[in-house]
Amino acid sequence: MNWILAALISAGFLGCYDLCTKHAVRQNAVLPVLFLANLCSAIIWLSLVAFQRLHPGTLPANLSVPHLNLVQHLQIAGKSLLVSVSWICTYFAVKHLPVSLAAPVRATSPIWTLAGGMLLYTERPAAQQAVGVAITIASLLLLSVAGRKEGVHFHRNQWIWLLALGTVLNSCSALYDKFLLGRIGFAPSTVQCWFAVYLALFFLPLAAGWKWRLWTRHEFHWRWSIPLLSLSLLTADFIYFSALHDPHALVSVVSTLRGGSTAVAFLGGIILFGEQGNRMKFIAVAGILGGIALTVLFR
Image (cartoon, rainbow, N blue to C red; front, side, top):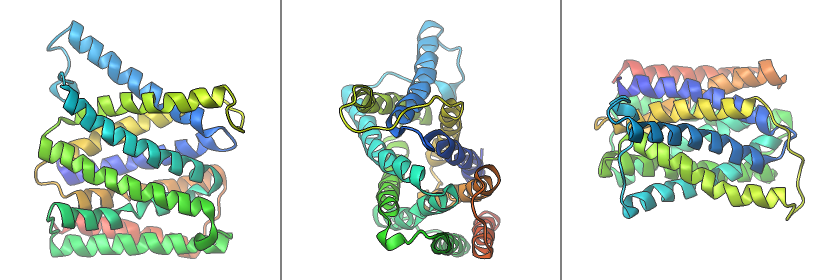
């Protein structure tokens, strides 16, 4: 699959993931949601690994997970640790913010990824791609500014700051993904499998602390969106990792195209959760889609 097409498909599933996340954590305890969602992902991948060990050569090559040495396990565990901190910040923020605002703020991560890609990997997008990236980023910022009309003042809202921290850490994770998949040469299935397993292990003690009431907590309610959250992210990440595995893929462009998930989350937030929509928001979303189209059509 072409890496740009893969990034766009990944964006669609990522938008579904944003909506499932909002549904799962709304008026619900965050830590059990994080643990259970990642436990679902880990169980799926460990089941595939067990099947592969029992029936060698049966699974498609893109689902195969080879044995790793200790150093390789530690390299993937480092990604899981980085993402776990990012997700703790993000999930708590999404719980308290409208998803039509939270999703665009999260999508501003291409700003950091673009800078990191140029600095660390000497990436140089083509002129038309650079214009498309610039339009997309500007539109995401416009969408963020529109949040002021909903009473969310970014400079003094603690959840916005927490979301911003999670967004920067997510950008660092995207750059590290390029290192794991491009420089080291891990297969996408290998990264995704052990990434999911280590995430579940990292969230286990936090979920246990919540269960034993080691701190003030909210009650947990099981929701169908928790396994759907896991499945949509598994699909989005598998396609995303496949895109980054392409030696011609630019992590800055892939990350920007994934920002198209904002459109899915924006419309879903209005339709499913009754969130506010205004002219500035619609203009910003149109700009996002226009920037993505420019990136795809002129490359």
